[in-house]
Length: 339
Image (cartoon, rainbow, N blue to C red):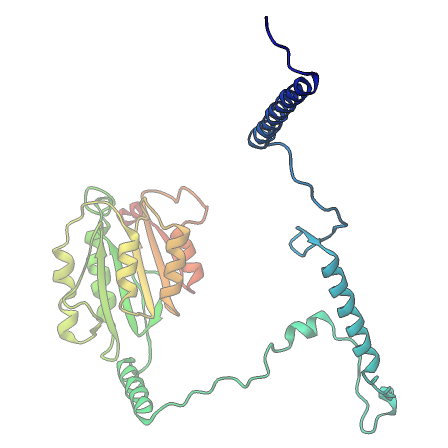
């Protein structure tokens, strides 16, 4: 038979067991709470942002058209600067007023104060600086004088002379260049001008005096001249070279008028005589312009040869050369030589 302890002892044991159970339960729940707090801290949502303080933000547009954000400190500093500038402006002395007299009240001669016109303003110099002044040394002056003496020595002296070819108007000058077309159409198989020109040019050059000079330029696709590439003094020795030179010529090839005229202008003549049938190609506007630039005061006398009457009355490069250079133009029908 089991012995039952007295009631007080049994009550004490029951109380101790209940206290132990309560302690274990409390420890268990505290552990659960701690674990839950730790898990919440580690795995909380990243989208949750910390609390931020609010305030008023001002913006203004900069010179670069970009927004600039201002806080309260920037606004306070700007107000202080504005107050300082206003105080400086108030403390600055004001300029005294000046009475400017009317132009009529000023002493001295009256001046016209009318507004200038656009023409007057355009005529005014853009600078008040004096024009540049250059000094020429003694050596430069002596060099210029020598060059002038050389040019004067090359100038033909004496009176000019008048000559004619193929019975035409006389042509006057001191420095003559005769340009003869020797292309195939000018030979015996064509117009027959080349053989006839031998006696005509020889006779004209024989009329020149010692103070005159001359040269003969022949051309087709190339050019040739008598002896040296320079104007020849009209002495007996040089005149004797003309006829043999012309007799050796053969008519062939195409016609390049610009080559013959360019070679003639290189001698700087004052009288140019061009003898040609004016075959294709002629001279274009740019070539005519170049001739005008190089010819200076030289006269151009042009003689054109053809078979029968002139077919067209329209201007050609030969009539233009004569008109632009104070010369003459003639057309010769070669059939008239047989009459």
